Image (cartoon, rainbow, N blue to C red; front, side):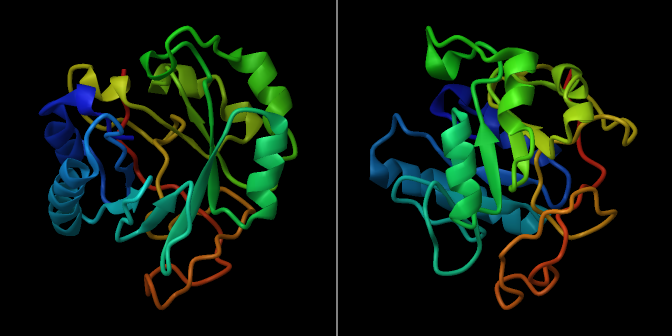
Amino acid sequence: MTDERMGDALWDALERLPRGAGVVVRHYGLPLAERRVVLARVERIARARGLVVLGTRGLVGSGGMHNGRARCGMSTRAAHDRAEIVAAGRSGADAVFVSPMFATRSHVGARGMGVVRFGLLVRGAQVPVIALGGMNARRARRLRAMGVYGWAGIDAWLAPAVRPRGREDCPIASIGPVRAARSEFAPSVASRCWPWFAPRRKLASANFLREP
């Protein structure tokens, strides 16, 4: 997830992401024209590094859209309660970002749902769940038993850089090439968009970068 408060740390974060990781370009505080400039720069880096880019709120990424539909690519949704999670599954979304998991600067004053409530909300979800809101790899490890597909963040990328560790951690949410499948959910992405991502294949994880 990008945000204007990241400043130039965004470009460092993109260089640290592993091939196949997803980037949702937000920067909601900027005018649309400036957001398009940010998207264009992110896309250039993504092409060179094998990242998947999703746009949102008027921006269409090469990999699809968050909270919207693009002609080609993935569609993800944001959810904050059980009804929105169910709606995301019924809409055919490829993944749903459930938040706020913990207190976060993106939603000042909002109370994080915590592990127990989060577990109740996502139980039996028919769409891959990505935890968002105050997340980092340490917190993500607490969610592994719930079958969470991965996690995403903003402030996690402002922490000092670390090198990738083993595969035992819950991965940063990724929508890259299918490798060792970990989810029974099937994405609705057409193979003509991404030849390596055949339709109805299982979502999978890769060797993702971890944050402290």
